[in-house]
Amino acid sequence: MDLPRHKADGKKHLTSTIFNQISMPVEIKINDRIVWVNLVKQNGNLLEVDVDGKTYEVDLLHTPGGTFSIIESGSSYNIELVPQNHPKKYTAHTLYDNFNVEIIDAETRYLINRGSKGDASNEKTITSPMPGKVVKVLVSEGDVIRKGENAIIIAAMKMESEYKAPVDGIVKKVNVKDGDTVEGNQILIEIE
Image 1 (cartoon, rainbow, N blue to C red):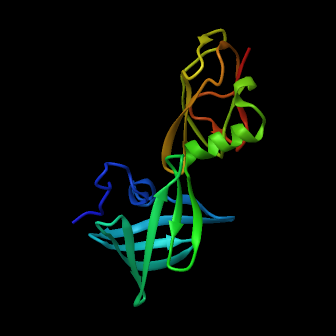
Image 2: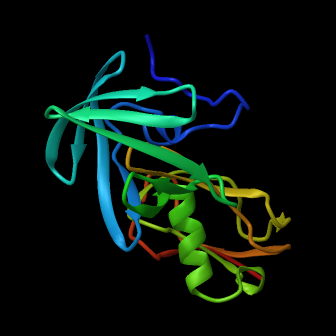
């Protein structure tokens, strides 16, 4: 038996967002705390999960009422996850507390970095949100590019992400080539 992936209403649950690939660490923001979570092993509802370097064996069950029942070291926890207005943000309700939870994958990190530099609609560069490797540059200098068009593919944390042009324009400069290693916040492509 595999982990339940969707509620009855068809919405994706946190388990499919976090554990879509075994051995791929995911950054999760819980209120103001950042944790790294990695699914090490799964056998039905029994999971071996690494959280910030510490391994936990848990029994995770998604109940018909939309809550998650978690048993770890003989203790039982019930958590209700309520999706917020963003597909990777939730409010987690426990018996005594509420937490804001955000899944921060490569795409989310890119959007956060774009937002921290001001209005993304005025931004004329594509930057790397984190260290990684250029898989494929999809444009050349002088190319006409439209807002939302794929410009480059970067591999980071065992995942490939396509980065899109933030504006319509002409590719002014491509600062990397296929196979290059890139740093976080490095300018990859400039658009005029």
